[in-house]
Length: 346
Image (cartoon, rainbow, N blue to C red; front, side, top):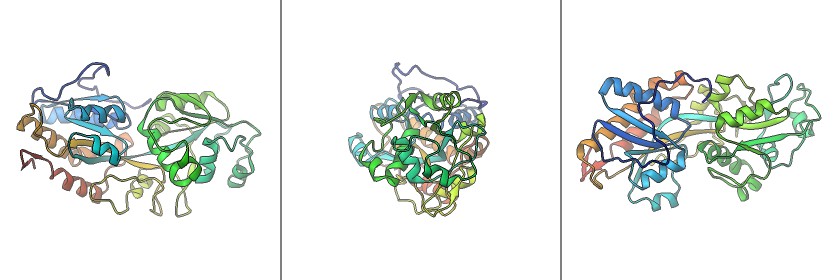
């Protein structure tokens, strides 16, 4: 993400190079989501200083991380979206989901004066469906009577690459718009009805900054670090909420399922920002597979345990919301289910 001062990652990989989870127990390998990469980089750097164990993380996207976990070429995968029932069935063994932090997707735009806009779910959906095409559309001006919105075409900017950010945003739109749910639907990559594609948060944010009248979606950290405008979004309780670490955390103040595979978008929480999501570490419940050793399996569990306990101190400074207490407790309970030849690793 542009603007973040990050520690040096200990080792990175070309996405076309094979990786292996069968190496030394002093080296752990993970792959997946790009969204938590700044936080994971910091965590893994600190973990190496403290434990002497290198954690090499491939930031290749949630889909890539899931695939490498399925192929058993990594010690853990990482995804901004929980595995679907179909994805769970396709895996060679039961997969445990461990949330590590929360993030948010924000609506950014390029308008003269950078007014602080208020947007409702139906208006957001219809903009990205191409049904609202002008900034002075009556539905926008009625929500923002003091903004002096211009008679200017709206240019939608969306991700061109598959991403967890797109998954979270489209998951939200599918909940608030029956038209969106039917098509384009929810996914990491979509057949967009309108707009121009750009790669990564930097690409979307950069194109919005260069294009008067444009609108796009990016992650919280990118918005804060680059000082671009973002909208308040009306949540399910009828409150217009600005994304912040506090409002993101509030979104998780809901009943969580036992397996922690949950969508937090369109939250029931009164003060919660509605386009919010956990990001997950994924690992096999039964760690005795292939040439894997007890030492390697235990090392993986100790790392994840550290991430959801001591490692949480690094979330907020890097603009991620740390796990709420109940979520952290539930994550620990899930981690205790992981075994090696039937023996618990914690």
